Image (tube, rainbow, N blue to C red; front, side, top):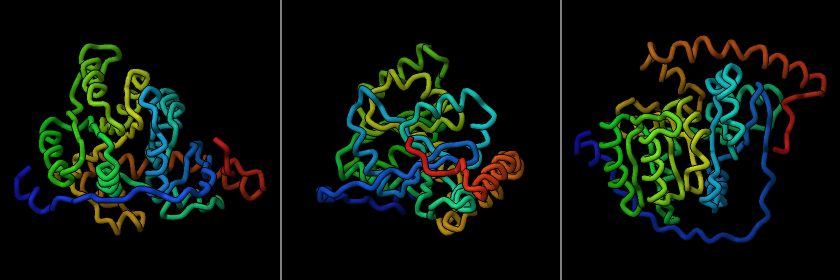
Amino acid sequence: MSDKFIDVLPPISVDVDHRRLEVPQAPARNYSFLGVKVRAMNFGELVDFVSQCDDPENPKLIFYHNLHSAYMFKKDPAFRAAYEQAAAVYIDGVPLIWAGRSLGLNLAIEDRITFVDSFEPLLAEAAGRKWRVFYLGSLPKVSAAGLPCLRHRFPSLMLEGRDGYFDQTLGCSETRKVIEEINEFKPQILFVGLGMPRQEYWLAHNVSLLRANAIFTCGATMDYVTGEVRRPPELMGKLGFYWLFRLFNQPGYLWRRYLVEPWALLGLWLRDFIKSRRGKSSSSVLSM
């Protein structure tokens, strides 16, 4: 990544008073539809959830669901088992919001959180709250470019990280060294961007060894930070067309995800739709 790229991202000075009035918190909005369970959260509610993760000996896994993960959840028992360990699963993708709303669920566009748009605001929160952040993932060249870029962008952020190219075999020496590196830094937030489903598998196997308050899966976020992958216009995300932008830019990699996999969920949607019309909805509010 060139210095020119860094120059177009001016440093962010974070000086925020995070003291808040003690007010009763609204109950969590947990839903089950298309065979998956999600917690509807806007960005502020996500930050509040992270702030409540205060025990590094008991890390809280924060995963996300979109149509691709819902498809994998249906097909892959190991993937389902990983999600069972998550403390919260938020919605990443407007099509999932549309599916829920078609079933009568009280979901708004603001209940969709995508890391492409929310990653840097979350880092700004971390800088203001003095949270330590570790980023694990991406190609070596992308990590080497992205970490300095983020330090330039957020000068007060306590940030460390490394690439995601290491032997991820359970219990192997390289994985042990990566875990030691993370634990020595003592992050409040750990981002794991190894790609789906590797990041979920790796965390399911190693979360008990990690020492971090909150652990996010984040896919190829660092690729967007560095410009390795073109970032979709924010408006396309709000309209629900991130997928179309990504398909146009990476057709060979993404055609199956966006043009084939959603059809495999149609039966689940029809089941939920029929039940919702009968008043016996499996897509009702849950207390998870």
